[in-house]
Image (cartoon, rainbow, N blue to C red; front, side, top):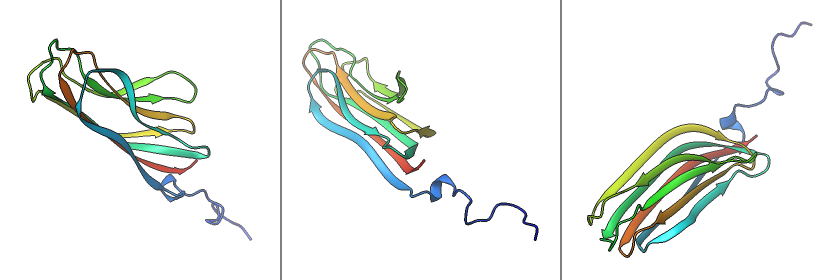
Length: 144
């Protein structure tokens, strides 16, 4: 008997058929006072898994004018398991008007491997004043 191809019983399923699970990460804060760089949300790919990063959002809005305006921002980073960092998406403003805002979106197909970390931070080096922040990420985690 001659066999052609690989039997389906032993073929490796496509990534979307390997125990997929939707995952979200993010943080939002209202009336946040000036602060140094602070981690707000994080997601680390578990052992034996990979994750497909599908969507990122970053948003900042000034809610009370600063005495001395700084540079408020929220940023999404990837920290690969092998070391280093990659700045993926940032929303920031350089003005001091109440209601001034910046919003950014990214629709991506970025594969994260075991141990890679996705992290959202915020910071504001202004003197006084307050900000609203919002960040969101959507991922699909699956067996590696």
